[in-house]
Image 1: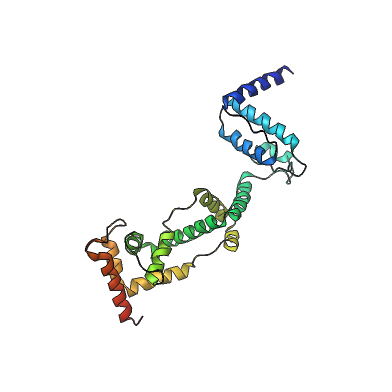
Image 2: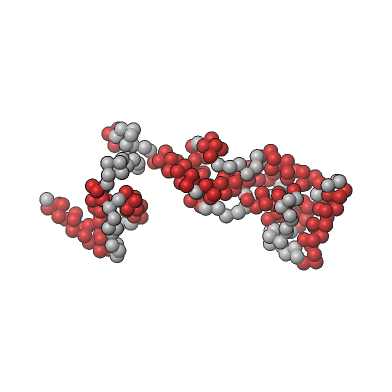
Length: 246
């Protein structure tokens, strides 16, 4: 009894240290938010305050909401839990990731395309050799081509692999890809196949050989508007198309 009074006193002090009122609503969403807070706060007193609130809210949950899966339990205690209650953290994280990706399909597809293109460019030796030539040209923000043209399409695809994506979704995508890559293939859109991307880049390299040389001489920030540089590049591409009968 004496120990309980001490713990309650610490919890009351911790509530004041948090410098904010703990949630009034006693539902599952509030409980999960408090669990996140419990991980975030390092102070013993504040942690006890949050933990006490969690335990109190749990009593108000419905029978269905009380079916909470435990994770992060010490290895020595796992044998005390059945499989319906216990799941290791890695599996919990993957399952959580799948649910979150399905709720954010646009961001998930952006990340999936980003990872796909980036992997082709940097892990395929044939494509990697273009990173400092055609890649420099494609990444130059002053270089523009109509998206209907194959060079414009290649630039757009290349830039997907260099773009900014949601970091949280990216981390989850990485873990799911390690555990269950087939799930990603079945649930997310494929922007382009590896072979199709490689065929497009190789075709551009063969049909417009000067582009590779230009890319080797410029950087991603070179101003191509000077001396009509960008227009001259486009005229060169147009000339090659006429010679090729396109």
